[in-house]
Length: 96
Image (spheres, rainbow, N blue to C red):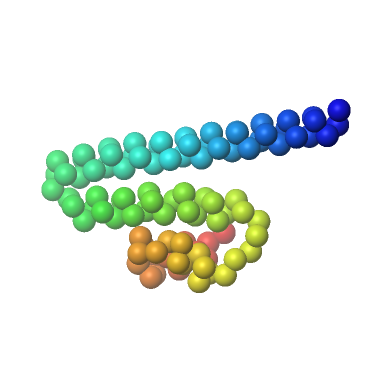
């Protein structure tokens, strides 16, 4: 009974986490769409691109914050890729 209960709770936790990440992706897409429409209407293409880069970097930052496994900054920097500039990426990776 105890093993079945623990497995059931693990499945519930997994699906709850999956639903939360799905909601994060949904909100990110909605926010990016809204920013794109607003910036195109005012011809602010650079602002739109900067907003999109930070929105894309946010789920990566959340994932790195939630995982307890310490990783090197160079591995995390590769994960961010070309989304952010060197200074912004270092600031993001070094914050707590």
